[in-house]
Length: 251
Image (cartoon, rainbow, N blue to C red; front, side):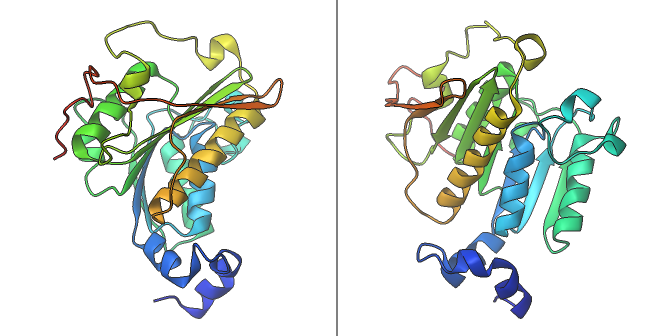
């Protein structure tokens, strides 16, 4: 049941026929896990909290550094040295105290992910580590949790939606073999453009809202070239030989 203050806060989005009062009530009941509170996770959290998601589990083992500030919009110089997850949770409390927030300041691993995903309606992978990304993908497929995966480096960004409950939905391992241990360059090595990673994170939030409202979400792999301002969409078929999602049984 929406209160008067909810109509004032969310009035603009309530006007949308795909959203409305029923959609707002639905979002208030949803619990979302955000893994990584950096350049992707900051806009993801800001827009999902703004949309009225009811609860978050925020996962990040890192502390804020001065080099984060050009693109990680949740933080200020006063946050340097603090836990990203804790600083982000404080931001949520200031933005909307009604939102429930849990904080995890340890790295997400194959052993901790089953616990971290418990009770989640949707997971957002906002990490910058290929090994962790594969672990998140595998855990989501096993648990049957929808996943919105984003990545960005240099001028390039990409998005992938994984829906384990859909027989046709490819997973991240269909795209990138988890047994290949080639680690791509990090942002510290290759550089990153703030608005590019912000664009990808914002679109992760948009895809998450579509999924949580039960709307159709665009399938396939989406890649953004920020230098030439071009989008590409690639059909991504589920691999019958995928070690993660082929014949996967959701718990």
